[in-house]
Amino acid sequence: MKKNFSFIVAAIVATIGITSCAPEMYQSMLQTTAFTEKIDSSSMETQRFYDPKSKLQYAVTNDNQNLYIVIKATEEQTQYKIIRAGMQLTIGNVSKTNPIANMQYPLALGFQKPTSKGTERKSGSAPQRPDISSLKLQFKSKYQEMHLTGFKPEVGAVLATHNAFGITVNMDWDTLNTLYYKAIIPFKTFYKEKLDLSDTTKYFNMTFTVNGIEMPTKEGNKEMGQGAPEPGMSGRNGMGGGGRMGGGGMSGMGGSRMGGAYGGQSHNDMTEANKVKFRLQLVVKKN
Image (tube, rainbow, N blue to C red; front, side):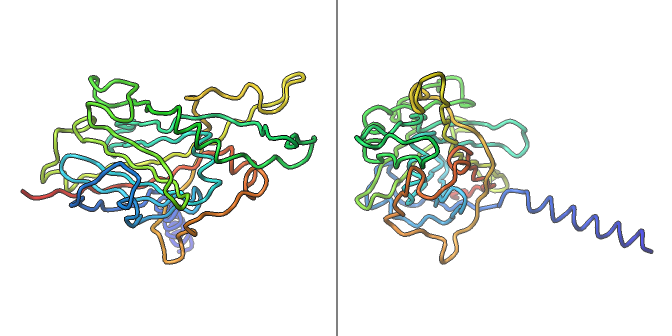
């Protein structure tokens, strides 16, 4: 009797462990209004979900031709990490081990050494707060391309953020200093020409990855920050999680101010990647 009881307990524990590790299942919503990648009043639409680790708010919708993604970051620390380390969007098929498609945007800017007068730090002192404003200017002036893998061969590996294939992505700030990431990905570029009723039973494994910042180390007499990674180098990969946004899940619109270099976040928080994983069930518009 004791053996049977122990077996039952072990089975329950194992089931709970498997369930807790499985990505959340979300149902997409049908995109019924015009969607633009521009950062304007349409960006204020409700982000349905919130991930507390990465501090990202997000929503994914679709129609029969396209997948639409909106990601929102109100925290300045999160914005800094996205700009410096880069971000990846991965679409996977649950029936396959490897992802279907992966889009890297934005590409990594790398570590920035504080350059303002008086910001040099002594050994053991806290890092200086980075200049987020200058990072914004760098980003807007330099990074107008995405790196793709897993898409159909004719699409190519490197594309401008606006291109003939209809894959468009934009990242910018609104007047309240909130960072928005908006993307349109046509199904025909990685899956099929358009959805049909058979796709209502299918779903994708979705992952948003905010890479970890690669911190350079001292070499000889070089100061920390010299020899920073060149743009396009990906950051570290790690683990994270996602969740449905609760009533108190949303951060303040202005975001928090950064204290020191990382706004109160530990070194590990900045160097480890955050992954938001979920399963997305598609919806199909009936003709």
